[in-house]
Image (cartoon, rainbow, N blue to C red; front, top):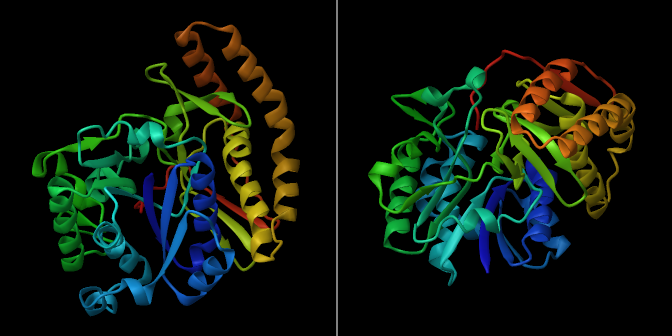
Length: 360
């Protein structure tokens, strides 16, 4: 059994539920501990009676140490502070040999078992941001992203986990200060500080808006999405995508894109539209309907371009056996069809090519 944990409050309820559903569907050998960070989230999740899931309330989870610093942190900072503590809670209170923390705004397009298989004899698995050059904020935000991180319930894993938990109690804020940022800058030196640390190699784990510029779609079907790394020509299956800054606000969907999305007609149609379609499907479980106009809006603006150019691009990749030609065509495709639109109709897409922002 693969054990996972995640945390979110009612503001992240739909995103968190969507992530959980995708993970349960793709990894049929999974069990997920969900830490509900407010009463509303706990009540909603409990009513769903999800299989292979245990919902844990704040009352059950919080301890004196966490409560002593809670008022000194914002809601987001407190969630960051608690990240190592929810993993610690799972390892200490349940008879499990490992636990993988997963961010609530991920979505799984394939079984993450291929990522877990890399751990082998290691006790810790961490993932890099893999920033594109123009968005590289490694110095201030850290090399690693606390989005998918595994600890074994052994001496090596617990040593690092306890150290991290203590550090987050001491300092965990949404600012760069003295070489620290949130919970994630602490991971920068783990390869030398701790033993048995493995940095994820699979490119399909951790594709996100801040690195999508390095890849181009080479194949897409109902059950699989394949990307190609432009610099190397390496093809890989997309395992999970980090839907950073996708928010629900006042009954509208707010997608804040601070990063240039290459081949926008394809990227948005294949990734974002499919993600929103999943959200729409799962909303019925909460007895709400607010994405109908969104789906129509996205389809009307992107479908024609996606249909025409996606077909052309995929046919080229099927016919071409040359990775060099694929990279050349991919680069041309990116430049020709990067779309810069501002759409307002139940959806707000804020698009800024060169703006930099600290990444959570």
